[in-house]
Amino acid sequence: MVPAGPAWPDIHGGGLPFRQVWERGITRTPLTAHTRLVALALATHADYTTGTIPEPVQPYLDGLSAATGLEAGRVVVALNVLQARMWIRRTHREERPYEQTVLELTVPAPLLPALCRPSAREMTLTARRAGADTPPATA
Image (cartoon, rainbow, N blue to C red; front, side, top):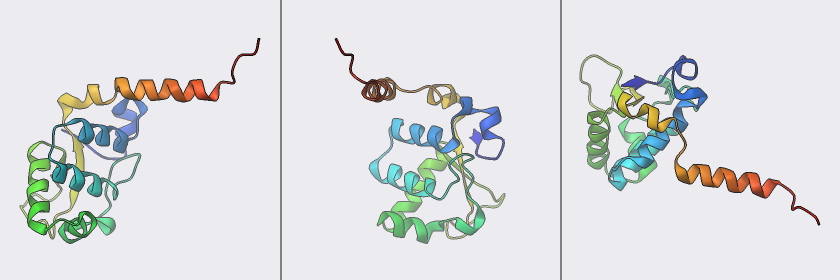
């Protein structure tokens, strides 16, 4: 598991911002729609470059429930799945309920190399954008 943090861009990710790598992983991994929704709602609170979620902006259970429109029980299930698959971790040693838990985004280490490479779709979109920026050749 590779945690978010200030050292992220220098050590991991090939220069990519943490959240970009993390969100690639969340969108490429087979998760239920509810789990993916909770994950992406949680990520909106994280710093884009480092992926850290400062305690003052932690959404906690109530915030995630409000942001997603899901009942608290569904949010808890999604958070448990994300924790079991190593996409998040609790920063406190003792198990606290999610109403009081500070969460941290993490990337499962075995997936990191693949997530730092652009997908075929991303490469196609980049090539199209580059081509669109080039003026047409004149004869």
